[in-house]
Image (cartoon, rainbow, N blue to C red; front, top):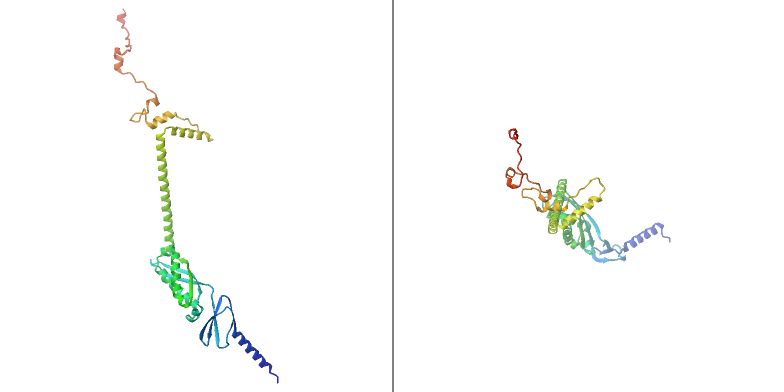
Length: 295
């Protein structure tokens, strides 16, 4: 008795279905959580897994690190500034049984926890702290999310705040503040330079005052530099003694008159008493004789 071809085809199809239902392949980075008649048996794998068809069921869990983008959230900071912040989280499954049994969709659940935690933590921080203490806030976010997802067999390793979008008015205000801070630093540096230069000049003046030869050397050096330049200017140097007398005030009067050694002695005009007094050695004037006296 020959078996109909249709029955053979049905048997082959059923055998293939049973085979694919009984034989599973689990990759190295996966684990298979097996249920037998709805009861948890445990994780299996990696490698070839044989199941009892229609009695055992297996759910695969990826153990690799998952990169999850946290959508941008509207956050009001502690100092009442509205910002938009997005972040990224890195997590992996440590306990496949808990990830399948304790939560329906551990990836979606972790995403929701991350969004609410991001709004909560940033809402308790000031804007300056958010911009300056980013690493501290990232660690706080990772710790809180990890504590909340631990019952699901999830390990959150890193949470990073990516972008912080500020209002346009706040951006302009921060730009003005940064510019004012730069101008302040520039003025402070300039003032410090002027102060140091004045100290150096005072020290140089003190050295010159103690050693007059120093100014003579500087005088000769200046003449050498002027003579080395190719120009049409003719320099007539003054005697160094004249310059020294003007600087030290030796031989000068208190009313600002130049010293006699520099300008030369000016003879005084003779007075009337000197002309009339014969004892001073001067020759008296000779008066002309009258005509009657000649006769």
